[in-house]
Image 1 (spheres, rainbow, N blue to C red):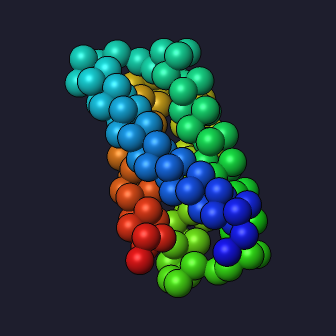
Image 2: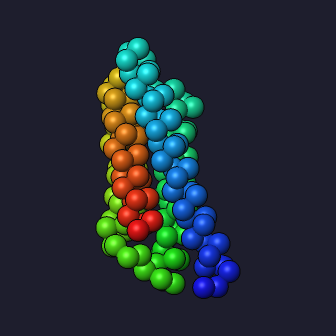
Length: 126
């Protein structure tokens, strides 16, 4: 295995774990604010957008790795595709909603995508 291929695998692995943690932190943050009946803050919204961007970068590394050596289970790819379609979809869908509804949907989206990231991480390690 080439050193670049090995480096990309390590980056994809570490980045996947970091995205799981990031989604959980955002899920906790959004849930806390929701339980207090508070709306989404600009910093939360920008963090959510950052998670979308990092998911896209993770997907780009995944596409490069897929070209070099496809994963054992294609379900791994499905979880990544789900995340990259789901997150921006939810963001733009609730963008013009009531503040509490926006908070609820973004917090739930963080929990859903944390599960998808974890499932993708698990299928990638096998």
